[in-house]
Length: 355
Image (cartoon, rainbow, N blue to C red):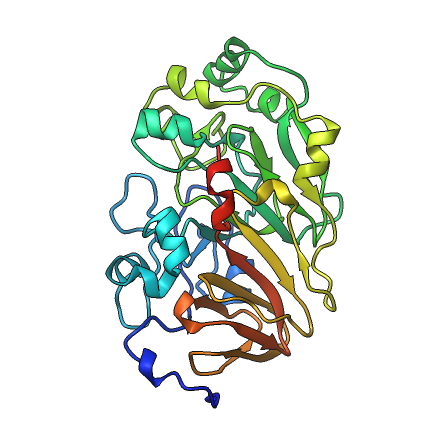
């Protein structure tokens, strides 16, 4: 039974309130989705390898697919546009406008993802009239023994070299060209825009990213997509390859992008390094969480059961698999009993640093 805290919040009755989100899986071009279904009580696979959580973003070229639907039947996007300050807070709204600045996903690939990359903000603005590119980050929830991800080329390439591999449909050379990093549960990897990458089969990921669906494919042989049509954002490969980073990631940069073992059951910790600050924040909240300041956030419950006590909303009972959408109007809050990951937009002081 849901409990009610003793703080006065009736005056906020017309404002946005926290709520548990239903699963938001849909068909995609690669296989997977059963781990998502098991965690989130959703439909599972075999071709629903992604869930978009707290999404104001649509799939590229689609009108509504991808948007989160709230309990009242409205989309989160429409609800935020109707009352942006309630959802996002005055400071966020003044800096970023009526955008959550965040898309959270679960990725559950049963096959290796294709080698692909995402443009940065300057490219997206110039060629697609969009305000965001797609820097993203992966938090590894589960990984098979010996799992790895590809991140950046292992040695510098030229546009001509890569274009030739794409034209030849040379998937083997493309995947072999990536630098590989071993991963295990609890690791996290920031993927800057422009960097080519691929996630291995069986790696279950919580992803934070800028709020777009901008992906350019370099290979697609074993996937249910025609890259010659849908692999280049409608721009053609000659143009979209200008958004690709051809230089490798060196050790110093890798140290700023990769963190290890950040999902301890008993510790509260920031998951990413400061390199992620211009784009998003993620914190693991352990057995006894700190008091969290008011602001937009998405909490994914990974372990246990407990409750979230809000200053300006009813206390909410939560358990493993619950995804909680938290508006700024809920005020400061604290979680007890359960553990999981809190995803939030960037702080306003970092807004100018995003590329």
